[in-house]
Length: 425
Figure 1 (spheres, rainbow, N blue to C red):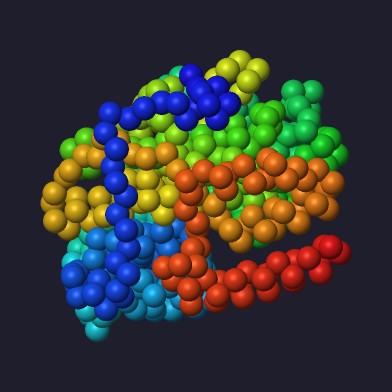
Figure 2 (cartoon, rainbow, N blue to C red):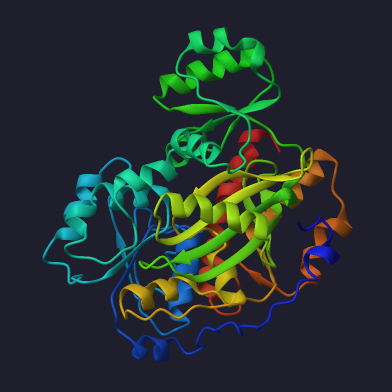
């Protein structure tokens, strides 16, 4: 087991160093390399990493997203952008668009980059698989990963450590188990994408039983399902992820391990500073135990939190699609989008045994973290700047896509100022 210190975590040596691919600086040249059809669903940071990862290998991609100003939509590395119906409120419209014979997309590889697209592909798999290639499996498998009320009991059953949790279904349940709850705790959604759509946050913090009842009632009114979960003590750096790609034969073509250093927002957010680290056998073994039990294939990220009270890595969630740090994996030497393409389109399976240790920084989220720390009065300049002294890659670099950077900066600034005015900053 690795300790928390930089020295100990980063001292592991790989047997082979993979040199990361570099994006072709000539935009016209890379477009001419290959004209294969790859369709990316969703325009968030994960989609941006996929677009760039494929472009690094000269593969053209079409981006389908409901928001024309989403993070990946203005990148020069997409060949075409199509505004689509949101699958959360118009899945039939999206299905009709994809299956429309007017679209020259027959045989294209579909890569979903958000949970709602994973669910959409899974629930419409029978029809979509006739026209497209993708790794998303049928709903009987997918729902056991997406829905935490199914994932956590399964993990507990096969011996994968989890946080303590309850699955409330009524106020009567809360009253009957009142003495068993622990505070502070969190209300954690079964389906994160629906919850974030309503509350704009990943969890709801609970400080006492009265607050638990009030927020549970509110959640029920929004027709959402939640679990009551303990909070594992420790800062954001106690969160680790095992990332892998498993092909249709069950072979692991690529794997990588990361550690969050900071999140946005702090405590219950997404990684704003993340680094690759040597593989941690404990989380690798636990993640693969779950994935094998589910007969899972494709790309996935299994997240754990290290609980220093018993020194166990405890399951948090599994993401079955590209994540916000996808570009980190590519630059570290594990180009998961390209591996997916080669496996499903070219039918070539080439394992990648090693990767580099570098840091990924979401420069726009870090600006927000900077001001939040100043406001909270706990800003430490030395700790804040420490990751910037390492070999690093930015979520939105200026050098290789300046127009996208400026557009993204504009929209992020608007969002931040709007939120700041609303919160009284």
